[in-house]
Each structure stands twice: as C-alpha cells, then as structure tokens.
Length: 370
Image 1 (cartoon, helix red, strand yellow):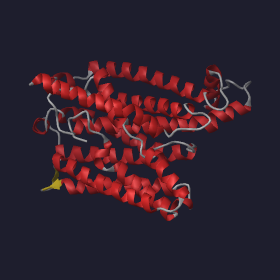
Image 2 (cartoon, helix red, strand yellow):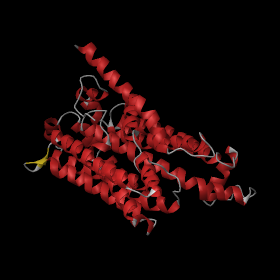
Image 3 (cartoon, one colour):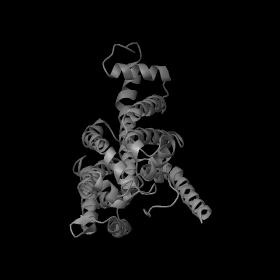
Image 4 (cartoon, one colour):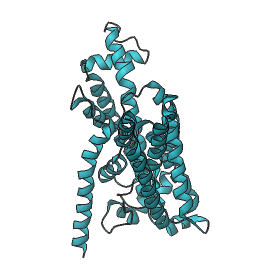
C-alpha cells in the first residue's frame, strides 16, 4: 500500500495550521465533546450488541444486567440465565471487539501521521503477516493444542519479530529511512505471506486448514474473559503512551526538518511510535487474527470529521474503532444466524469499497490539480 504524500489530502491542512495545532485550550473542549459523544455511542452499541443472539433480551434489561454486573443493586429481579448470557457469554466478546477495534484504529492513525498519508495502515510494519505466520506454525505443528495461550502468544511474538525485522532493514546510517521502511515492509509482508500460503497448501490436516483460514480471516468466536484480561493491559497501556505523543505527531506532519527545529527528536519519536504500534497491533492480532481495514478506514473517516489534530484524532480513532468493530462483529453474528460469519469478512466487505473510493477520490483530486 503506497504511503507517499499526495497533493490533495486532509493531512495537507497541517502545513498551514501549526499555531492551531500547538494551541491547547480549544482542543481540550473539542476533545471532550468528540470523545464524550463517541463514548455514548459505544455504550449504546455494547447494549444493542449484548441484546441480540439466540436468546434476545430487551435493551432495558441488558442495561440493568450490565449495571448489576458491576456491583450495583439493579436488575436483581431479572432471571439468572439472562445475567449469565449477557455477562459471561456475550459481554467478553463485545469488549474484546471494542479493544481490538480501538487498537487497530489508533495504530492506523499513528501510521498515517508518521507517513503523512491517510492510506497507510499498521500492515506496513509486517505485524499482521508475522503474527499470521507464527499462528499458522503453531497450528500446523500441533503446539496450539497444548494450551489456550500457545496460539495467541505465538502470534504476538511473531508480530513483534516481523516488526523488528522491518525496522532493522530500514535503518540506514543509524536512522530509519521512511522510504526504506516502506520497501522493507512490502518485501517482508510478501515473504511471510508466501511462507504462510505454503504451509496452508501443504497441510494435510483438514481441521488445521479450517483453523488456519479462520485465523487468517480474523474472528472473535470463542473469546472470553481470559483473553480480555491478557490483551487489555498491553493495549490500554500502549494506547495511553501513544496519546502522550500526539503533539509530536502533529509536528512531524509539518515535515521532519521543521519538527526537528521545534524540538522533536525525530528518530527517537519515530522509533517509539513504531514500537508502540507493533505492540498494540501485535496484541490485537494475537487474539483476533488478521482483521483488515479497521486501521485504514476508521482514522481516515474520523480525520474528515474531527480534523487532523492528533490530540483529538488519536482518542477519537480508538473510540471510533471500538464502535466500528463492535458493530461489525454484531453483524457477523446475526447476518447468517444460527451460522456465523468471520468478522474479518465483514470488515473487508466494508473496507475494500471504501479503500477504492479513497483511491478514486485521490485520482480525481490529482486530475483537477493539473
């Protein structure tokens, strides 16, 4: 996926908006408004999602059961079976979808800021390809059967290893060059993808093939509280650290030389942000598989709505990604009920046309600028 700047993108606003991007007071109020609205939408999506399934439950009852689940003396008159369905079966999967969506969308916003292009996404680091290859190795070798955590742990380590390889290949004279990193990412993605395809092709275990395809497409079936507890800590901690670099990201969008002159240690900040993206995306891939397009379309769409300032865009992207993947996973559960689609299929069906629209929009803008 190309990541070179184009003459007509939303990110171009940065070059003439530096004073606005460095001001704080208006942004604080705007961030509260945007994030507050998105948080309310997310809560509504969680309630709606938890209400649907094989045994539908009224929205009001779901809200009361959720409050009961956090220890409030509410909804005690409702059936214990409904409480179990909502809090034990449906809620952990919903929260995992929100966590993974937030991780992928925020990582996408960071990558788009680093490369100054709204078409960049975390896949440029090879995180998805590395995680997928490690997961396939764990499945085909039989290691995944030994423990619940073997598969996600393998995927996480594979994702970080791939990101480390891409970064090390991009280092020239002690610093990572953007163009070299992109080329290294393309090459590593292709190589790891070829290895994954070869393992899939030569696997003679039908069940293993089904498990591999399920992982490669991306899905959340069977995810529970244990998966959430393990993934939540690294993802949420890395997200908070990423938010702290929002001002540096704003300055990087003005150009590396300008950012350096304004006090940003560009190589250090770039490395830290790439490590954070690898950590966040690796944790998401480790529990959800290769869910595509969330890191591309959510931050781009929100940038058109809330603007390019990362002090607003990063938390808004996290909340927007949580909303998007929660809705997509709910649709995946309900469209073919009682059968279930992989959520990665739903995000691809939505994301691919959106991506083509972005390409058409850029081509049209470039034509009119000539």
